[in-house]
Image 1 (cartoon, rainbow, N blue to C red):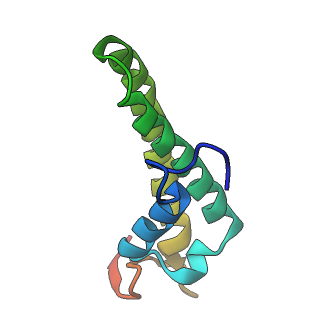
Image 2 (image 1 turned 180 degrees about the horizontal axis):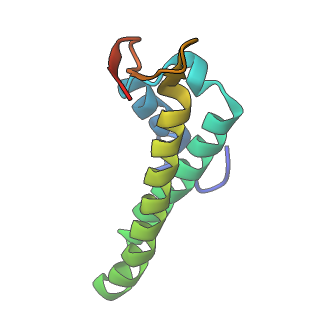
Length: 109
């Protein structure tokens, strides 16, 4: 584990991020992909930075939170792109269908 990746000296932040992905019902096959590992590492880094930011005085918190919002906006965009790459399927007829994580087809485009 990377130095400083523990929260309050207890749980590993990476484990918390991975558990959150499981709670969000990210399929195990997707969670094991290299892209997912990079996303977990990035999310862990940003989560640790957020926790550290909360330890600063209000003035410094405000300045650092602006950066945190930018980081989380970037993470959200990456997550949405991954959702579309993982769950958007095209059948033999060329029709595109968005599939939920539990395998239910939601709608066609």
